[in-house]
Length: 422
Ligand code: CMC
Image 1 (tube, rainbow, N blue to C red):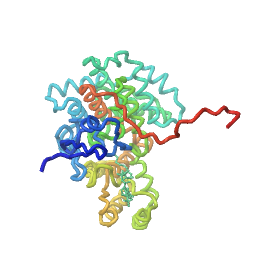
Image 2 (image 1 turned 180 degrees about the horizontal axis):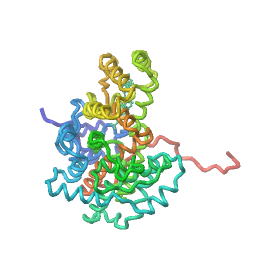
Image 3 (image 1 turned 180 degrees about the vertical axis):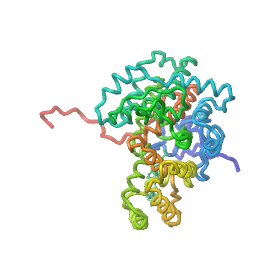
Image 4 (image 1 turned 90 degrees about the vertical axis):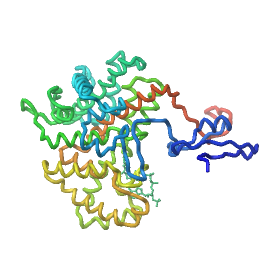
Protein backbone atom coordinates (compact mmCIF):
# COMPACT_ATOMS: atom_id res chain seq x y z
CA UNK A 1 0.00 0.00 0.00
CA UNK A 2 1.33 3.44 -0.94
CA UNK A 3 2.44 5.76 1.86
CA UNK A 4 0.13 8.54 0.75
CA UNK A 5 -3.31 10.07 1.17
CA UNK A 6 -5.77 10.71 -1.64
CA UNK A 7 -7.93 13.80 -1.29
CA UNK A 8 -11.08 14.21 -3.32
CA UNK A 9 -12.78 17.59 -3.77
CA UNK A 10 -16.45 16.59 -3.77
CA UNK A 11 -17.41 19.89 -5.40
CA UNK A 12 -15.54 19.03 -8.58
CA UNK A 13 -14.82 15.30 -8.23
CA UNK A 14 -11.09 16.03 -8.70
CA UNK A 15 -8.64 13.89 -6.71
CA UNK A 16 -5.00 14.33 -5.87
CA UNK A 17 -2.50 12.25 -3.94
CA UNK A 18 -0.20 13.60 -1.21
CA UNK A 19 2.78 11.51 -0.04
CA UNK A 20 3.22 10.93 3.71
CA UNK A 21 6.81 11.82 4.62
CA UNK A 22 8.01 11.15 8.19
CA UNK A 23 4.45 11.35 9.46
CA UNK A 24 3.68 14.64 7.68
CA UNK A 25 1.82 15.64 4.53
CA UNK A 26 2.82 18.79 2.67
CA UNK A 27 0.31 21.65 2.93
CA UNK A 28 1.86 23.12 -0.24
CA UNK A 29 0.31 20.29 -2.25
CA UNK A 30 -3.02 21.09 -0.65
CA UNK A 31 -2.88 24.81 -1.44
CA UNK A 32 -1.81 24.06 -5.02
CA UNK A 33 -4.95 21.99 -5.61
CA UNK A 34 -7.33 23.76 -3.22
CA UNK A 35 -6.36 27.46 -3.19
CA UNK A 36 -8.34 29.55 -0.70
CA UNK A 37 -9.20 26.63 1.61
CA UNK A 38 -7.33 26.85 4.90
CA UNK A 39 -6.69 24.36 7.68
CA UNK A 40 -8.43 25.44 10.87
CA UNK A 41 -5.87 24.35 13.50
CA UNK A 42 -6.02 26.48 16.67
CA UNK A 43 -2.81 26.28 18.72
CA UNK A 44 -1.19 24.51 15.72
CA UNK A 45 -1.99 21.23 17.43
CA UNK A 46 -1.82 19.20 14.21
CA UNK A 47 0.61 21.39 12.29
CA UNK A 48 4.34 20.73 11.85
CA UNK A 49 5.53 24.33 11.56
CA UNK A 50 8.97 23.61 10.23
CA UNK A 51 11.53 21.04 9.21
CA UNK A 52 14.13 20.86 11.94
CA UNK A 53 17.23 18.81 12.64
CA UNK A 54 17.81 19.95 16.23
CA UNK A 55 15.73 17.82 18.65
CA UNK A 56 13.99 14.51 18.04
CA UNK A 57 11.06 13.70 20.30
CA UNK A 58 8.94 10.55 20.32
CA UNK A 59 6.24 11.14 22.91
CA UNK A 60 4.74 7.64 22.76
CA UNK A 61 8.11 6.00 23.43
CA UNK A 62 9.39 8.69 25.84
CA UNK A 63 12.45 9.52 23.71
CA UNK A 64 14.30 12.84 23.49
CA UNK A 65 17.51 13.34 21.48
CA UNK A 66 19.54 16.44 20.68
CA UNK A 67 21.09 16.18 17.19
CA UNK A 68 20.67 12.39 17.43
CA UNK A 69 22.28 11.96 20.85
CA UNK A 70 20.04 10.49 23.61
CA UNK A 71 19.30 12.98 26.38
CA UNK A 72 20.33 10.34 28.94
CA UNK A 73 23.89 10.13 27.50
CA UNK A 74 24.25 13.90 27.28
CA UNK A 75 23.04 14.35 30.87
CA UNK A 76 25.51 11.75 32.08
CA UNK A 77 28.58 12.60 30.03
CA UNK A 78 28.39 16.16 28.74
CA UNK A 79 28.30 19.73 30.03
CA UNK A 80 25.78 22.46 29.25
CA UNK A 81 28.22 24.49 27.15
CA UNK A 82 29.19 21.43 25.12
CA UNK A 83 25.49 20.70 24.55
CA UNK A 84 24.90 24.33 23.53
CA UNK A 85 27.69 23.95 20.96
CA UNK A 86 26.09 20.72 19.73
CA UNK A 87 22.65 22.31 19.37
CA UNK A 88 24.05 25.30 17.50
CA UNK A 89 26.55 23.49 15.27
CA UNK A 90 25.01 20.06 14.77
CA UNK A 91 28.11 18.15 15.91
CA UNK A 92 29.93 17.61 19.18
CA UNK A 93 33.04 19.84 19.39
CA UNK A 94 36.61 18.60 19.27
CA UNK A 95 38.78 19.51 22.28
CA UNK A 96 40.08 22.64 20.51
CA UNK A 97 36.62 23.71 19.37
CA UNK A 98 35.23 23.24 22.87
CA UNK A 99 37.99 25.17 24.56
CA UNK A 100 37.67 28.09 22.15
CA UNK A 101 33.82 28.06 22.51
CA UNK A 102 34.04 28.01 26.32
CA UNK A 103 36.66 30.79 26.13
CA UNK A 104 34.40 32.93 23.93
CA UNK A 105 31.35 32.48 26.16
CA UNK A 106 33.40 33.18 29.29
CA UNK A 107 34.79 36.34 27.68
CA UNK A 108 31.25 37.71 27.18
CA UNK A 109 29.71 37.12 30.62
CA UNK A 110 29.92 40.78 31.66
CA UNK A 111 27.00 43.10 30.93
CA UNK A 112 27.32 46.77 30.02
CA UNK A 113 27.31 48.91 33.17
CA UNK A 114 24.36 50.87 31.81
CA UNK A 115 22.28 47.68 31.61
CA UNK A 116 22.86 47.19 35.30
CA UNK A 117 22.78 50.76 36.54
CA UNK A 118 20.12 52.31 34.35
CA UNK A 119 17.96 49.36 33.42
CA UNK A 120 18.03 46.83 36.22
CA UNK A 121 18.12 49.40 38.97
CA UNK A 122 15.21 51.24 37.37
CA UNK A 123 12.78 48.45 38.23
CA UNK A 124 10.55 48.56 41.27
CA UNK A 125 12.12 46.72 44.23
CA UNK A 126 9.52 43.90 44.13
CA UNK A 127 9.62 43.34 40.32
CA UNK A 128 9.35 39.69 39.26
CA UNK A 129 12.82 38.50 38.11
CA UNK A 130 11.32 36.99 34.96
CA UNK A 131 9.76 40.36 34.06
CA UNK A 132 13.17 41.93 34.56
CA UNK A 133 14.81 39.26 32.40
CA UNK A 134 12.35 39.68 29.51
CA UNK A 135 12.99 43.44 29.46
CA UNK A 136 16.75 43.18 29.91
CA UNK A 137 17.13 40.71 27.03
CA UNK A 138 15.14 43.06 24.76
CA UNK A 139 17.18 46.05 25.95
CA UNK A 140 20.44 44.37 24.92
CA UNK A 141 19.52 44.90 21.25
CA UNK A 142 20.06 48.64 21.75
CA UNK A 143 23.58 48.06 23.06
CA UNK A 144 24.88 46.07 20.08
CA UNK A 145 24.49 47.98 16.88
CA UNK A 146 25.55 44.97 14.79
CA UNK A 147 22.56 43.01 16.18
CA UNK A 148 20.57 43.71 13.03
CA UNK A 149 23.28 42.18 10.79
CA UNK A 150 21.62 38.79 11.01
CA UNK A 151 22.96 37.56 7.66
CA UNK A 152 26.57 38.47 8.46
CA UNK A 153 27.97 35.18 9.86
CA UNK A 154 30.45 36.89 12.21
CA UNK A 155 27.94 39.36 13.61
CA UNK A 156 25.39 36.57 14.03
CA UNK A 157 27.92 34.47 15.91
CA UNK A 158 28.79 37.41 18.17
CA UNK A 159 25.14 37.86 19.23
CA UNK A 160 24.74 34.12 19.87
CA UNK A 161 27.78 34.09 22.15
CA UNK A 162 26.66 37.25 23.94
CA UNK A 163 23.16 35.98 24.59
CA UNK A 164 24.27 32.60 25.94
CA UNK A 165 27.01 34.19 28.05
CA UNK A 166 24.94 37.01 29.54
CA UNK A 167 21.86 35.00 30.57
CA UNK A 168 23.26 33.80 33.93
CA UNK A 169 24.57 37.31 34.67
CA UNK A 170 21.19 38.92 33.93
CA UNK A 171 19.31 36.17 35.80
CA UNK A 172 21.45 36.48 38.94
CA UNK A 173 21.33 40.29 38.72
CA UNK A 174 17.52 40.19 38.59
CA UNK A 175 17.48 37.99 41.69
CA UNK A 176 20.00 40.08 43.65
CA UNK A 177 18.11 43.23 42.83
CA UNK A 178 14.79 41.72 44.02
CA UNK A 179 16.50 40.83 47.32
CA UNK A 180 18.13 44.22 47.78
CA UNK A 181 21.53 42.53 47.49
CA UNK A 182 24.51 44.07 45.64
CA UNK A 183 25.28 42.88 42.12
CA UNK A 184 28.05 40.26 41.87
CA UNK A 185 30.32 40.57 38.83
CA UNK A 186 31.09 37.39 36.85
CA UNK A 187 34.23 35.51 37.90
CA UNK A 188 35.73 34.25 34.68
CA UNK A 189 37.96 31.73 36.44
CA UNK A 190 34.81 29.72 37.18
CA UNK A 191 32.88 27.32 34.95
CA UNK A 192 29.49 28.35 33.52
CA UNK A 193 27.28 26.78 36.25
CA UNK A 194 29.77 27.62 39.01
CA UNK A 195 29.86 31.25 37.95
CA UNK A 196 26.07 31.42 37.99
CA UNK A 197 25.95 30.05 41.56
CA UNK A 198 28.63 32.53 42.58
CA UNK A 199 26.67 35.48 41.11
CA UNK A 200 23.56 34.21 42.93
CA UNK A 201 24.90 33.51 46.38
CA UNK A 202 28.27 35.24 46.96
CA UNK A 203 28.27 37.58 49.94
CA UNK A 204 31.60 38.73 51.42
CA UNK A 205 33.89 35.79 50.76
CA UNK A 206 36.78 36.43 48.30
CA UNK A 207 35.56 33.56 46.08
CA UNK A 208 32.26 31.70 46.39
CA UNK A 209 32.87 27.95 46.45
CA UNK A 210 29.81 25.91 45.56
CA UNK A 211 29.61 22.21 46.39
CA UNK A 212 30.74 20.29 43.25
CA UNK A 213 27.60 18.12 43.46
CA UNK A 214 25.42 21.23 43.23
CA UNK A 215 27.49 22.61 40.35
CA UNK A 216 27.00 19.36 38.47
CA UNK A 217 23.28 19.28 39.31
CA UNK A 218 22.82 22.78 37.86
CA UNK A 219 24.78 21.78 34.74
CA UNK A 220 22.58 18.67 34.26
CA UNK A 221 19.40 20.71 34.75
CA UNK A 222 20.71 23.17 32.14
CA UNK A 223 21.35 20.27 29.71
CA UNK A 224 17.83 18.91 30.23
CA UNK A 225 16.21 22.29 29.60
CA UNK A 226 18.37 23.35 26.63
CA UNK A 227 15.92 22.40 23.89
CA UNK A 228 12.56 20.73 23.37
CA UNK A 229 11.72 21.15 19.68
CA UNK A 230 8.68 23.31 18.77
CA UNK A 231 7.45 24.29 22.25
CA UNK A 232 5.60 27.56 22.86
CA UNK A 233 8.65 29.79 23.50
CA UNK A 234 10.65 28.30 20.63
CA UNK A 235 7.68 28.87 18.36
CA UNK A 236 7.60 32.51 19.57
CA UNK A 237 11.33 32.78 18.73
CA UNK A 238 10.72 31.34 15.27
CA UNK A 239 7.70 33.53 14.56
CA UNK A 240 9.40 36.78 15.58
CA UNK A 241 12.70 35.68 14.00
CA UNK A 242 10.88 35.01 10.72
CA UNK A 243 10.21 38.78 10.51
CA UNK A 244 14.04 39.20 10.57
CA UNK A 245 13.94 40.97 13.93
CA UNK A 246 17.28 41.02 15.73
CA UNK A 247 18.02 38.02 18.00
CA UNK A 248 17.66 39.99 21.26
CA UNK A 249 14.14 41.11 20.38
CA UNK A 250 13.22 37.61 19.18
CA UNK A 251 14.67 36.03 22.34
CA UNK A 252 12.76 38.53 24.51
CA UNK A 253 9.55 37.28 22.86
CA UNK A 254 10.58 33.70 23.61
CA UNK A 255 11.32 34.66 27.24
CA UNK A 256 7.91 36.29 27.48
CA UNK A 257 6.25 33.05 26.33
CA UNK A 258 8.23 31.11 28.92
CA UNK A 259 7.02 33.51 31.61
CA UNK A 260 3.50 32.08 31.21
CA UNK A 261 2.43 29.62 33.94
CA UNK A 262 1.34 27.09 31.33
CA UNK A 263 4.90 26.90 30.02
CA UNK A 264 7.69 27.87 32.41
CA UNK A 265 5.69 27.99 35.61
CA UNK A 266 4.43 24.45 36.13
CA UNK A 267 7.19 23.51 38.60
CA UNK A 268 6.07 26.37 40.83
CA UNK A 269 2.54 24.92 40.71
CA UNK A 270 3.95 21.53 41.76
CA UNK A 271 5.63 23.00 44.84
CA UNK A 272 2.40 24.81 45.76
CA UNK A 273 0.36 21.63 45.27
CA UNK A 274 2.70 19.49 47.41
CA UNK A 275 2.70 22.15 50.13
CA UNK A 276 -1.09 22.20 50.12
CA UNK A 277 -1.30 18.39 50.32
CA UNK A 278 0.88 18.73 53.41
CA UNK A 279 1.44 15.07 54.33
CA UNK A 280 1.58 11.60 52.80
CA UNK A 281 -1.69 10.55 54.43
CA UNK A 282 -3.55 13.21 52.45
CA UNK A 283 -2.32 11.90 49.07
CA UNK A 284 -5.18 9.40 48.35
CA UNK A 285 -7.82 12.06 49.10
CA UNK A 286 -6.03 14.56 46.89
CA UNK A 287 -5.82 12.09 44.00
CA UNK A 288 -9.52 11.31 44.45
CA UNK A 289 -10.43 15.00 44.23
CA UNK A 290 -8.35 15.39 41.02
CA UNK A 291 -10.21 12.42 39.51
CA UNK A 292 -13.49 14.09 40.47
CA UNK A 293 -12.45 17.08 38.39
CA UNK A 294 -11.16 19.40 41.14
CA UNK A 295 -7.95 20.72 39.59
CA UNK A 296 -5.09 18.83 37.99
CA UNK A 297 -2.19 16.84 39.25
CA UNK A 298 0.54 19.40 38.57
CA UNK A 299 3.70 18.02 36.97
CA UNK A 300 1.73 15.19 35.39
CA UNK A 301 0.72 14.81 31.75
CA UNK A 302 2.17 16.38 28.63
CA UNK A 303 0.88 17.42 25.22
CA UNK A 304 3.50 15.29 23.49
CA UNK A 305 4.74 12.69 26.00
CA UNK A 306 2.31 9.85 26.52
CA UNK A 307 4.91 7.98 28.50
CA UNK A 308 7.36 8.85 31.29
CA UNK A 309 9.07 12.11 30.27
CA UNK A 310 12.72 10.99 29.89
CA UNK A 311 13.88 14.22 31.54
CA UNK A 312 11.76 13.48 34.62
CA UNK A 313 13.63 10.17 35.17
CA UNK A 314 17.00 11.94 35.09
CA UNK A 315 15.79 14.79 37.29
CA UNK A 316 14.55 12.35 39.92
CA UNK A 317 18.11 11.04 40.29
CA UNK A 318 19.54 14.56 40.36
CA UNK A 319 17.13 15.32 43.21
CA UNK A 320 18.75 12.64 45.37
CA UNK A 321 22.25 14.01 44.62
CA UNK A 322 21.14 17.51 45.59
CA UNK A 323 19.39 16.36 48.77
CA UNK A 324 22.64 14.65 49.83
CA UNK A 325 24.08 18.15 50.07
CA UNK A 326 21.11 20.28 51.10
CA UNK A 327 19.18 17.78 53.18
CA UNK A 328 15.98 16.22 51.87
CA UNK A 329 13.23 18.55 50.75
CA UNK A 330 10.37 17.53 53.08
CA UNK A 331 8.00 17.62 50.10
CA UNK A 332 9.88 14.74 48.44
CA UNK A 333 8.05 11.99 50.36
CA UNK A 334 4.70 13.47 49.36
CA UNK A 335 5.86 13.65 45.73
CA UNK A 336 7.01 10.01 45.74
CA UNK A 337 3.74 8.85 47.30
CA UNK A 338 1.76 10.90 44.79
CA UNK A 339 3.68 9.36 41.90
CA UNK A 340 3.17 5.84 43.30
CA UNK A 341 -0.58 6.34 43.78
CA UNK A 342 -1.12 8.00 40.40
CA UNK A 343 0.92 5.49 38.42
CA UNK A 344 -1.16 2.61 39.75
CA UNK A 345 -4.51 4.34 39.24
CA UNK A 346 -6.70 3.51 36.23
CA UNK A 347 -7.59 7.21 35.66
CA UNK A 348 -3.94 8.17 35.07
CA UNK A 349 -2.98 4.91 33.33
CA UNK A 350 -5.80 5.09 30.77
CA UNK A 351 -5.02 8.75 29.96
CA UNK A 352 -1.28 8.05 29.75
CA UNK A 353 -0.47 10.66 32.39
CA UNK A 354 3.09 10.34 33.68
CA UNK A 355 5.39 12.71 35.60
CA UNK A 356 6.86 15.41 33.38
CA UNK A 357 10.08 17.45 33.70
CA UNK A 358 8.46 19.82 36.20
CA UNK A 359 7.40 17.23 38.74
CA UNK A 360 10.79 17.09 40.50
CA UNK A 361 12.64 20.20 39.24
CA UNK A 362 10.85 22.60 41.60
CA UNK A 363 11.80 20.44 44.60
CA UNK A 364 15.45 20.63 43.59
CA UNK A 365 15.40 24.38 43.03
CA UNK A 366 13.64 24.92 46.34
CA UNK A 367 16.15 22.74 48.21
CA UNK A 368 19.00 24.73 46.63
CA UNK A 369 17.50 27.95 47.97
CA UNK A 370 15.98 29.43 44.80
CA UNK A 371 12.71 31.27 45.42
CA UNK A 372 9.77 30.18 43.24
CA UNK A 373 9.93 33.43 41.25
CA UNK A 374 13.31 32.28 39.95
CA UNK A 375 12.06 28.92 38.58
CA UNK A 376 11.16 30.20 35.08
CA UNK A 377 14.39 32.23 35.04
CA UNK A 378 16.38 29.05 35.69
CA UNK A 379 14.58 27.49 32.72
CA UNK A 380 15.33 30.48 30.46
CA UNK A 381 19.12 30.45 31.01
CA UNK A 382 19.79 27.20 29.12
CA UNK A 383 16.77 27.39 26.80
CA UNK A 384 18.51 30.37 25.18
CA UNK A 385 20.82 27.94 23.34
CA UNK A 386 17.82 26.02 21.94
CA UNK A 387 16.05 29.23 20.91
CA UNK A 388 19.17 30.44 19.11
CA UNK A 389 19.72 27.10 17.37
CA UNK A 390 16.16 27.30 16.00
CA UNK A 391 16.58 30.96 15.04
CA UNK A 392 19.76 30.16 13.14
CA UNK A 393 18.16 27.15 11.44
CA UNK A 394 15.21 29.29 10.37
CA UNK A 395 17.49 31.94 8.82
CA UNK A 396 19.58 29.28 7.08
CA UNK A 397 16.37 27.79 5.66
CA UNK A 398 15.48 31.23 4.28
CA UNK A 399 12.07 30.67 5.90
CA UNK A 400 9.13 32.83 4.92
CA UNK A 401 7.64 35.25 7.43
CA UNK A 402 5.15 33.38 9.67
CA UNK A 403 1.72 34.57 8.64
CA UNK A 404 -1.15 32.17 9.28
CA UNK A 405 -4.75 32.57 8.06
CA UNK A 406 -7.96 32.70 10.08
CA UNK A 407 -11.59 31.75 9.79
CA UNK A 408 -13.48 35.00 10.22
CA UNK A 409 -16.49 34.59 12.53
CA UNK A 410 -17.26 38.27 13.22
CA UNK A 411 -20.01 40.66 12.14
CA UNK A 412 -21.19 40.93 8.52
CA UNK A 413 -20.79 44.25 6.66
CA UNK A 414 -22.62 47.06 8.48
CA UNK A 415 -22.70 50.85 8.34
CA UNK A 416 -21.07 53.09 10.92
CA UNK A 417 -23.58 54.51 13.42
CA UNK A 418 -22.93 58.05 14.73
CA UNK A 419 -22.42 58.04 18.50
CA UNK A 420 -25.61 60.00 19.21
CA UNK A 421 -27.68 57.26 17.50
CA UNK A 422 -26.18 54.23 19.31
N1 CMC B 1 -4.16 15.82 36.12
C1 CMC B 1 -5.36 15.23 35.95
N2 CMC B 1 -5.92 14.99 34.75
C2 CMC B 1 -5.23 15.36 33.68
C3 CMC B 1 -3.94 15.97 33.77
C4 CMC B 1 -3.43 16.18 35.05
N3 CMC B 1 -2.23 16.75 35.20
N4 CMC B 1 -3.48 16.22 32.53
C5 CMC B 1 -4.43 15.80 31.69
N5 CMC B 1 -5.48 15.28 32.38
C6 CMC B 1 -6.67 14.65 31.82
C7 CMC B 1 -7.65 15.69 31.30
O1 CMC B 1 -8.57 16.06 32.29
C8 CMC B 1 -8.29 14.95 30.15
O2 CMC B 1 -9.22 14.02 30.70
P1 CMC B 1 -10.62 13.73 29.94
O3 CMC B 1 -10.21 13.07 28.65
O4 CMC B 1 -11.38 12.87 30.87
O5 CMC B 1 -11.26 15.07 29.71
C9 CMC B 1 -7.15 14.12 29.55
O6 CMC B 1 -6.26 13.90 30.67
C10 CMC B 1 -6.41 14.81 28.41
O7 CMC B 1 -6.00 16.11 28.86
P2 CMC B 1 -5.77 17.37 27.90
O8 CMC B 1 -5.97 18.61 28.71
O9 CMC B 1 -6.55 17.20 26.64
O10 CMC B 1 -4.24 17.20 27.54
P3 CMC B 1 -3.29 18.34 26.93
O11 CMC B 1 -2.33 17.64 26.05
O12 CMC B 1 -4.05 19.45 26.34
O13 CMC B 1 -2.58 18.91 28.22
C11 CMC B 1 -0.97 19.49 29.85
C12 CMC B 1 -1.25 18.75 28.54
C13 CMC B 1 0.51 19.44 30.16
C14 CMC B 1 -1.39 20.98 29.71
C15 CMC B 1 -1.79 18.81 30.98
O14 CMC B 1 -1.41 17.47 31.08
C16 CMC B 1 -1.66 19.52 32.32
O15 CMC B 1 -2.39 20.48 32.57
N6 CMC B 1 -0.70 19.07 33.19
C17 CMC B 1 -0.47 19.73 34.46
C18 CMC B 1 0.42 20.96 34.26
C19 CMC B 1 1.86 20.59 33.93
O16 CMC B 1 2.45 19.74 34.56
N7 CMC B 1 2.43 21.27 32.93
C20 CMC B 1 3.83 21.09 32.53
C21 CMC B 1 3.94 20.44 31.21
S1 CMC B 1 5.63 20.03 30.78
C22 CMC B 1 6.35 21.53 30.38
C23 CMC B 1 7.37 21.42 29.29
O17 CMC B 1 7.60 20.38 28.67
O18 CMC B 1 7.96 22.47 29.01
